[in-house]
Length: 349
Image (cartoon, rainbow, N blue to C red):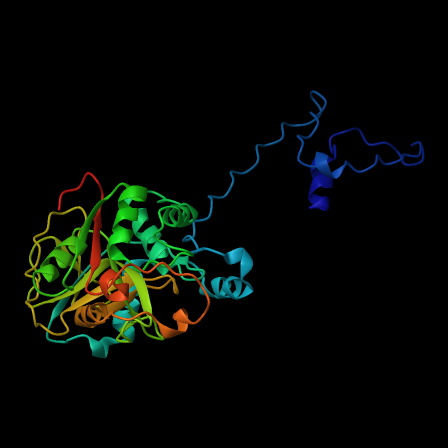
């Protein structure tokens, strides 16, 4: 850079002077660093051609995907290292396709598949705040573009007496908090995710609205059955439907995965016939929870079974000396067989 600056500042058109007759020349001191960006002084009139304009600036680089939001990042070296390795937060469609490729043996080959999905930001929880983290993620679809700060949700939940340290053992209280904090419409489902509730859940997800679900979390974050000892919350914003035939028009086949179809946003599309009750392996919920910034595809029946057996408070939590807010009737009354359908205030069911 220095050599370039010297050549640009020289005056090659000045009359040459014989070295023998030239007085000693003391070079001027180099310009101060903060002056390096100033314009060059004008050349003497008639002695130098105009300096050509600088070349145009290169186009700005394409914006990278936003990294995951991590609550408590400044307090945890482990979270910082994990975030650095993880890279940008994946989109819902990309993550679903990754799972379909990785676990293709799980998905019935006799069906075609339609993926309905909406993107969520990621937020890694700190402590027992999985329910409030799930609500925060859902809130970004209900109160766009950035939702509501998690700190505000925690403060409101504590102030209302719904929680002591972020835990949420009551679906009804979670629904009240969603109404108060997000100003959204809330529908509380009771009696599990099967029967007539299944059609309501699927129609809700196909419309692009979030579903909040309590369930028991296995070591890989998937639903399991531990009688509520591993009670956890997830948010679903998409569904993968196995169908015998894809309605036409309005759907486009994925260029990478034959047999996978996506609704075309700019075209009206007919909803497919929803799989009947008892149609095994034909419905998967696209879900996210606060211990990973990846989406997961969960078999609907597996989620339904896990949600229906949340009955007991964890013995390890009961003995850890921490304070928890548990409703009258315990975990069974607060979580078992319940879920929340959330939609924007101005939308219709």
